[in-house]
Length: 426
Image 1: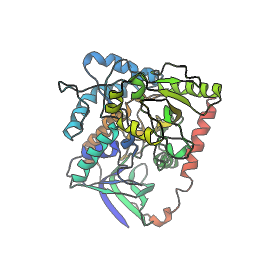
Image 2 (image 1 turned 90 degrees about the vertical axis):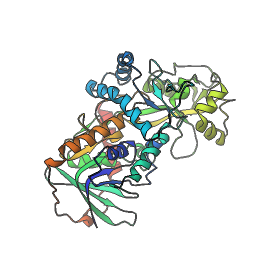
Image 3 (image 1 turned 135 degrees about the horizontal axis):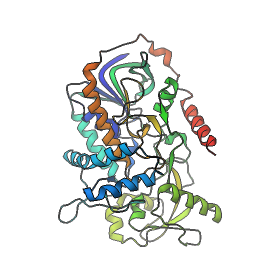
Image 4 (image 1 turned 120 degrees about the vertical axis):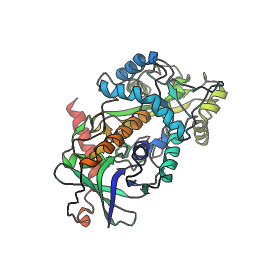
């Protein structure tokens, strides 16, 4: 089977969707996803999305991002992200995204760990779902955009140092060749490589493995962020995230004796290490999170979904502490890209969590992920539109059937490489 597109996008999270929406509608765009279109980690983001509140906030926002990233961030990428934030938020609202408002109608901001001031736009505790669902609806309404679910990328097709499309496997296990002038990889994170993660388990670093296979430049594969607070559970599966906004509103972390042991608003890696240390000291599989300092009306209005989920698990966060434990959450490394999201291979772009443009450095500042994904997905779309007429289609002769089962060891390959790099730094 063979499919042809002008631009192919692998992934239907905010990066993939926003890239598609920012491409001229004269181009045929195909989006594919290995699961359902609404099963991306973008839908799971709870806390919010950062925005530069004013020019007076720029220096502080820049420093907060750099400090959280241990000053290993690319300052050019950080500036681009921050300077683009107001236009992105404005654009999202044109798609119908409903951010929380003050009584006077102005945007309401919250604060999370390592932020100097409140600068995070939010919608209850389901900001990711609010943003992504509106972008998904907009993409489905575009006549030039086709969306194919349950289509798994197996490999990219190349001609020299140029990507000409991909080979994929559909829901009926047919091998499919998808030819495209440009390809954008927006496949999300690496949570499927871990036993404890806030990510969907089908996010198994497919793009990273394919990039490794083809010698495409990668960067900082060992920069894996652990989120300090996920709801502790005896069962296997994706861990439920307790948003950093909860701590931003006043929740505190307590040890086995219900004593506070850390400043909860430090960067995530610092708080996670403190929790692991306390768990070891107490010989406990979790610590406690207390929301006693947060008024009940704030909990019910800002965190209704967290409240309901915890209640279903037997914990009323308005009355009692809940057990929390760190879990793999975000990937700061990935496919190395420039400030327009172009990879080291011609006609191949990467955006979102699978890409590394240097914004996050060694540790991501809370609520920068959605913003970074959107900003650099749009820049990829703009670069592709600018360069589109510079290329003519190339379709190497391949046999899609020869790619069957070729991705069998992808998960192990990436996991082994991450562990190798981590050990080399010990």
